[in-house]
Amino acid sequence: MDVPSGYRACVVGLGSMGMGAALSCVKAGIATCGIDLSDARRAEFAAAGAEAVGASVAEFEGEFDAMIVLVVNAAQARMVLLGETGAATKVKKGGAVMVSCTQSAEDAKALAAELEAMGVTMLDAPVSGGAAKAAAGEMTVMASGSQAAFDALAPVLDAVAVKVYNIGPEIGQGAMVKVIHQLLAGVHIAAGAEAMAMAARAGIPLGTMYDVVTNAAGNSWMFENRMKHVVEGDYTPMSAVDIFVKDLGLVTETGRSLKFPLPLASTAFAMFQEASNMGHGSEDDSAVIKTFSGIELPKKEG
Image (cartoon, rainbow, N blue to C red; front, side, top):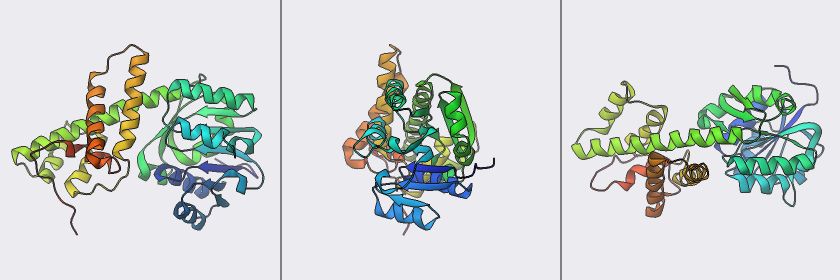
């Protein structure tokens, strides 16, 4: 879509997903600023065409039509938007904030209410797709909020997403869909790790096992993506074990709040907790396979 004249966006959080979203906005012709505490990430985005970069919104002149918050959790989103140098103060009247962290429905509702009291409209808009999809402007957005929020963020949504699901007007529904999605993602990784660990114990070459599964009915996107890391022996974090400790913790808490049993999610949560407890928390989430003893895993070449 055509970007309105003078339209400006700010991306808060230039991690793997945030950097991709920021670069997609620049490619779409949106004047985009970026906020991150990392000097290296700010420098990377500055070199890629950012209008400006900074460690806080206080370093920028003027206001923004759109703000995308791609941080780790609700506490970080609240801090960057409402803290001492609150980024929400830089959103134009008629603009909107797209909050894309994984959080509970209750946290999303509470944050939206505080922003509304400031005259700032929020879209509850978690995202999925991984770093590659983010860099290609092909994320999936599962969003809830007012039509005004969708309209204000339309140029940004068009730039960063291949699919935008309008869950409805109620803040918190987007967050709930993301929580349910993370249940599936975490269970799929844990199940994939269990299958590959069993193959290792049985003496099946993991490359062969991977090829069979990815060309058969047992495949899933998470198996295909994450178990490749196991085959390559490369646990460089794309999404760390501790991210799923956080996300599956939120899944189980949500299940308790709904009085709804989640036996598979609870088991996967325990596996990720064990991986973190063993010292693998900062490794790629596929490192959950290291919780299985008595097997030999491939080593990274070179």
